[in-house]
Length: 397
Image (cartoon, rainbow, N blue to C red):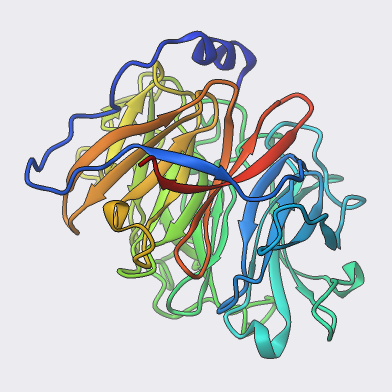
C-alpha cells in the first residue's frame, strides 16, 4: 500500500473510467460482475490478511496491522474473535504501511505447529521475518517462542511489502519492498546485492552456516558474484499481496506503482520486472538514462492508470468449482478506489479483463483464499479509524 493523501482524495472523487486495459480473446468465457458478502459481523482493526492452515477452513485467522492475529469460527457470522497471537509491543506501525503485514502456516503445520510472520520493527527500522510455535492445543501462540530468521534493514517507513506464502514446492516466498521514500533513490530495484525490491525464496526446514534458514540450491542467483542467493525475482517496487494459483502454481503479484501505472505480474524464477528503469510497460521518467537495452525485462500481465486507482492490491485465482461462472478468474483490486477487476489468463496471454465491482470509501487491503476456493476480501471502511470487515466474493447473480 502506498497512499499519499492527495492521491487518495483524487481517487475517491474520480468517476469510474472503464477497464484498466483492453480485453482480448473474444471467445473466452465472459467475466461477470461480482458481489461481496460479509462473512462476520465483527469489525476488525486494520485487517490486512485472512489465512487458513492447510486442509482446514474451520478457523480463519485475521491479521490486524497493529500486531495481532485473531481466530474466527468460519461457521458463525456473529462470533467474537479469539486472540491467537499478540505482538503489538514489538511491532512498529507508526506509518500507514508498517505493522504486522503477513503470516502463513507451515505446510506440515498439523505436526510441527510452526507459523511464519513478517512485521516491521524499530531501533533500527527493519523488516523481520520470524518463526513462531503454536501451543499444543492449537489455540494460542506464545510470543516468546519467536525465532528470527531474517532482519532486513528498512531505510524509510513505506514500501515494506509484504506477503509470506509457502509455494507448492514447500519453500517460503516473501515479497520485500524497495526500501521506501519515492523513486527508489538508492536503486535497490536493480541491485542484486540487497533483498530490497525483490521476492525471496528460502528453505525454512534447513540451516546454512551463519543463517537461520537454507538457501535453495536451485535459486537463480546462487553462486552469482555480488548477488544474494535468496533472491527469486527482482526489479519490483513494492509487491503488496501475492498468491499462488492452486491449480497451475503460477505466482501472481500486485506491484504498486510510482507516478503513472499500477501493475499485475506473474513472478517467475530469475525475473527482472524493470523497476526503476521502467514503470509498467514504459520507461520511468525520473530514472537517469534509458532502460538497459540488453536487459530482459518481464512485462506486466496488465496495468491500469492513476485515474482508476492509486495502490494495487494483488489478488487470487478463483478455483475449486464453487462458482463455475468465475472459475479460473484472477481477481485483483485497488486500495484507494475500491475497484475490483477480473482477469482471465490462458497460460501465455490475457484473454479477458474487466472491472467487476466498485465502491467508494472501500479500502481493499487483501485478497485471500480458503482451501475450498472461497476468496475473501479484507476491507477498511474507514482508513483513519482502521475499522474493517471481511467479505467473500460471489457472482453478482
